Image 1 (tube, rainbow, N blue to C red):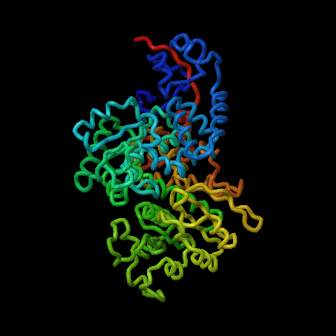
Image 2: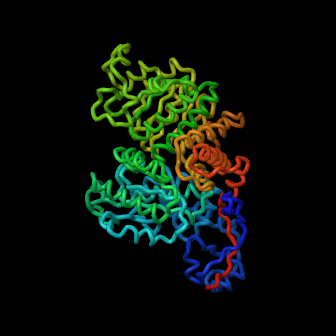
Image 3: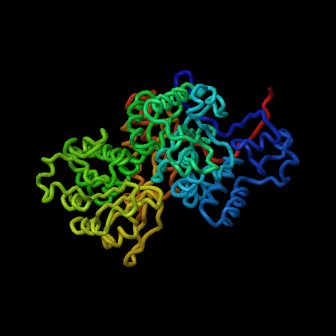
Length: 570
């Protein structure tokens, strides 16, 4: 809460909650339901006696039962459905279960399983969650906003589902991504689920399989495009901002041709960011900084090749440039150290359909004049001529990073850094076991999807997942805690640096490049503190004494614990 002076003070998290629903309605409210954990007094006060078994359990008792049921399920999609079922009936229990078994649960509520869940969304649909904003309902979008039961929403994740992971257009099935991301906000970043809202924009789909699927629940027409699309997105965002003017809006899985223009248009107008561009960049750069610390090098010492030149890859490249410049490099030299490769090969100044966000990285004929084959734009030739020390895959094309490429890197590089980041697992550019094997154990490998450790010549190589969950929950916590008005580029930069400092490989506390997910709460709080400090420096938040920020972050960190309920008088 705030005092009259505007200073944000600690909240009393233990105070009772006063509510005015009872009986079946209370048991049906996923945000309030405690199931068998309602006390005797609560059961009587809220007319629940007899509606649930008489034994009063703790949330830990409930977690044990839920986990034992979970272990009886064989396939990952069914496990995902089971977890979503718990989420729909008791969100506190769901998040306690996820938090307690985070290593097991995260791949099921998010990548890689969420990809399949998005593809099967209409077939596995169970219950309402979030808002669906249909183009056909554009004349009463404001009314739809007020249909939401979350007036205090603080974090919104929104998608139009055109580019879900590496799977393409999934129509309204892309709703699985906002739901998954917001679960991570709560489980990893301490944002109460009462403050989160997933939104999907339904402008149709170009996925013929969905259009021909009798179970598909979205609008059955081709995607609305052009100015009509842009006007509708603007209508939705304007309405969202009117309803929740202080909420973070996180863009997810918009196609490349829309993602960057939308971010540029709204970056300075709304409290927003694009996780595919900025979040991916931040966690990737944080991972690379950690690898550099471990190597006793700097980012500016490296040459980097991107396999994939879309908005996500260029977002990473731009953040790398910013960090290199901070290290003392000129912007020109930093751009020259980075090479982009797409389906046509090297991105150069004469490339066909060169995107605005690629132009600063496009190589000129003068820059390629010293190449033995200056017109050979293949990935193999890029690696031969540029001699990268870092190789980053963001193409969504499995197997694109070849044996010959990594073996050549290993021939001149003492410890190549290889990061196949495409999701889900089936889209990974190179398997970690191959990257380790083909470099004879020399490579540092980090991936976008989770992979088991690789044993090579008796040595275990831990494969850290370069997961956005390390960044956006902490970023959101920092922004919400100090009521920041905008999200700046430097807030992502300090988030990267904070993540790098949490690396066990850097601190000497373990062989992993990134911290264990079991430590995600402390990582998120550390990032939140640095983000809050930077927001104040960037003049997008009220000035707060720096020494007060950790307490403010702590006071805003929600944990999945039951609170005492009291009957509200009307």
